[in-house]
Amino acid sequence: MNLFRKIFGKNKEKNVNKTESHFDKYKRELNDLNLKSTSDLETLVKPLIKQTTKLEISPASRPPENSQMNSHFGGNPYFEKGEKWPVTKKGKHLDFIFQVFNKLESQLPDNIELIQFYYDWDEFPWDTSDGGWLVKIYKNIEPKNIEFINKPSDLEKSKYCEITFKSSSSLPDWEGIDLHCYNATKLSCVLNEDEPWDNYRQIVKKLIEKQDYQSQLGGYPKWVQGESTPKNSNGEPMELLFQIDSEENADLMWGDSGLIYVFYDEKSEKIEFSLQCY
Image 1 (cartoon, helix red, strand yellow):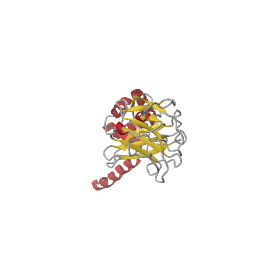
Image 2: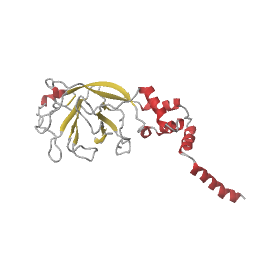
Image 3: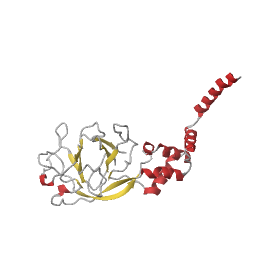
Image 4: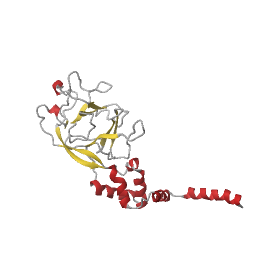
């Protein structure tokens, strides 16, 4: 009899585990951690808050003197003596999109003094493996070595738009929360099985207000088509260097009202790029 119970008791236990739903599994795991309420969800999410810097793009204006030393979209980029205008592997000039100097109000890594972004609208790259894009990083700048380089004649004239910086807070969107806190995803599902994202979004709104699509430095990406954060060599999510929205003032349109995302690993200096649109 004991042998019978031993054999069939185990089989019965296996059958119970096999029929356990994801909802029941999450609930059991969360109960073990004493995570049950929206207050607990807020406690899980709050430590994830990161600072981000919103880039507000001013209407087009006449470039001031020495505009190469300003943060701006369009116009002329900063160059130093000996440099040339960036080109694709095929030798075609890349279009200059924007540059940002690392100021106190900008959320950039400490080892970067200036970032620039170039893009080829003909190739229209979508991810890192595509040609036709360039993130140019200056760890140090030497204004005494500044050199003006005219925009190549094969590139269309672009609007010069100054950038102002606005500091704010950032949290992962619903698509990305389980990458940073899987228990927050599970608790959201348990609290509202039909619309699990609803509780999470309410917590985000309470903590940092609504997160819109925007051009920004640092923080978390807000994805158009779903979570795609690349990972570093240790398998950890890479840090967002910047995301750039489709900006009317600067005449930028990434596909159908899309955004570009650039990630940077400070240790390896690895850079990843992607574009998503509707």
